[in-house]
Image (cartoon, rainbow, N blue to C red; front, top):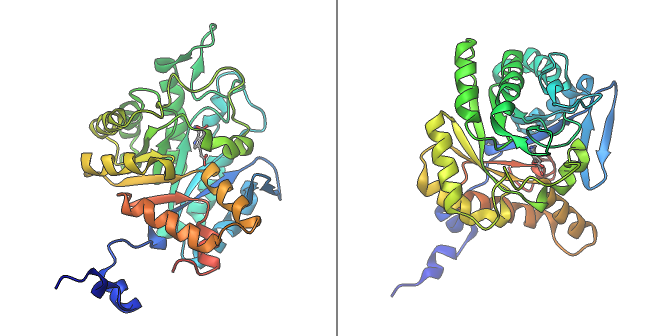
Length: 323
Ligand code: PBG
């Protein structure tokens, strides 16, 4: 007789036949950098997540390495935002400074990814260059993204991760990296990035909310999934080494479609709003946080992700939720 429960009889049997696992090697930790000295500020809407000044970053990363976490996605902000967001490419900005310090200290023992976008650096808070009429200009944005990407790559990033959603940015960045003898630096593209309300807490961190309008002319429409496949295949053609779906939890169907469409490594970004919801519910005593976190990450991997970018990583290791 066929009895599915045979495969569930004991924990050891269940472990033997489990289809999915969550391994720390597959987790990427987002790190927020802020200009200054000796700063470590907790983000109000993201308990347990801090903005650190570059001088603190080596010890922060060391703590993660000691827990078994080795991949980091870096986000920065300038001391003063400028009209175009040119400071994203400032050689002495917080991101290149942190990358140089981390590379020197940890060499090849860690993986460094650098988010590439203008929104945290430009006064208007949009991901690209704005023209007089308030429209975001695609092709005028590309050289600025290239400047930022090549700056982070030259500082020692292993991957640059463009999150702006301008057309052709992967091809343009790839070409520039190759021309500058940075051919070993990879591109993890935010290929299917939706215009999502789940980014709310992040925008508080980076103070990157658009001053006027929204991101609907460049980020993807929440209603679309075939379009996500199109974006992913385009970025693959343009030379992306890995692609991302963002956010994660409300987009598991997109992850599954992406998994079927490409053989490239696939990342899922478990974003700030997803984290904030779990933290708030756990603080209120409504949920068992550890079980929820493992269930969410398992679901993301089950849907087809190879790696997950998540704010839960550190606590999950500290508290033994994953091992
Ligand atoms: C910048 C960027 C955003 C996130 C990653 N890169 C915010 C946005 O598009 O508004 C979101 C990260 C998160 O919410 O955790 N373009």
